[in-house]
Structure formats: C-alpha cells, structure tokens
Image (cartoon, rainbow, N blue to C red):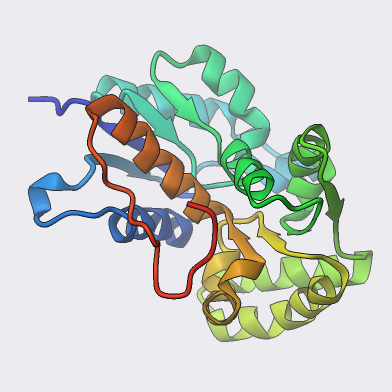
Length: 249
C-alpha cells in the first residue's frame, strides 16, 4: 500500500549530500516513535551526468536522467519531490513543469530563510556552475538581498574542497574550505552554503557559529517538514532546532 503524502528524494548528487538531507529531516522532526516520522522514498543513483560538466563544458546533459528518476519516484507513489543538489536546480523549472508531484526548491527555501532573518547581504559558497547560472544571485536580488561571492582564486579553492569530499577525503576538503570560509567571514554578514557537500565539510564551523550559516540542505529539510505539516495538520518541526541554533525555522 502506498503511503499518503510520500515524499520522494531525487538524490545521488552526491550520495553523502542525499544521506545528509535524510538525516536532517529525521533530526528536525519531533516524534516519539518510528511510525510518526515523515515517509521518504529515496533515489540515490549517482550515474546522473555531472551538472557542472554540462553547464560549463558542454558535457552530457543530466536532464534525461533527472526526468527518468522523477518519473520513477512518481510511479512509486511520491506526491512531493525534492532534490538535495543546488546545481541541479538549473533544471528545476523543466522538472516542475513535467511533474505530476509537487516539487520544493532548495533555492527558494534558502533565500526565504535569509529574507526571514532580515539580512540585506549574504555571502555565497557554491559550485562554479551554480555561481555561473546565477541561481542564487537572481533569487536574492528579487528579495532585495545583496550577494557576495568569492574571488576567482578563492572559488578555485572552494571547488577543490567540494571535489575532495566527493572523492571521500573530508580532511583535505576542510583544509581547502578554510580560506573561502575566512574570506566570506570578513566580507559578509552570513554565508549561504549553496552546495549540499559544504555543510558536511564545514560541520565544525557551523556548530561553532550556527547563526552565521544558511545550510541549504537544512532549509530544504525544514521545507519538507513544513509541507508535510500542511498536508497532515501535524506539528513536527522541532523548535528550537538544536541547542544554540538560531537559524530561522
């Protein structure tokens, strides 16, 4: 029997970020037993072509694979679908137009969290492709929020850190991200972690300065829980989210 309000996760971009979203949904949900948790159907199939390679270098398009995974989740009963990958949201309009399920945007959820925090400026750490397509910059501009991005040298270091984590080397990844983090710490009032690998790399920094970061995977997890609350009438989102955590909920 298909569960009511089943949420599909179109993941695998990368697998660690997909698992992180699942963990955050679980951690942010206030329950007393297994049966009260939000039902998730997860596709973590990493053979989806590289998003940045297509957008920046003309590699194979990931859109056919994304459409295939979306249809697979819908056929399995998902009535809402999310993608824990920021760069993949370049294709969000096409996917949403083709979907019979509802879709929640990680970009919209994160920018709304920044807006609710009352900030007029925010820094952005993201992949080259996410920056090049202006996914966050345009959304922030519409919300009246200035966006600070790393310079070219610092951005290359950011990408090296992201690739290190994808290769299974979190220690090297964190070493690479130290300079980009310090750069935006000086230049901006807060930082959007606009790649879903970044909250894993900078987990210690997020714990130390929770109000300084907007973790895009966390804001997507919050959006999932709110969507489910709206459908079921249940109150599930933990408030406060964690000890000392002042990120908008």
